[in-house]
Length: 97
Image: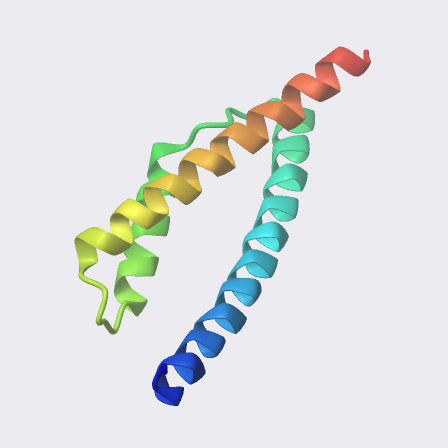
């Protein structure tokens, strides 16, 4: 028989995962809007300075227990996906013309 403490922790993790997904989808919606605005204004999609700023801001809020390199790897994936979404938004807009 499983220890009830384990199930309680798993249930809490499951709730967090659902909230993380909700927040990631909200972030993705904002990225799509950002890509459309950048395209409208003729701005470049890729901004290494902005990406570095994101890493610094996130790292500054990391109180652990995740080590900084783990947080950076997670945000590398999030930023990679954000870039892909922005490009998708721009390409979709170009195809609509």
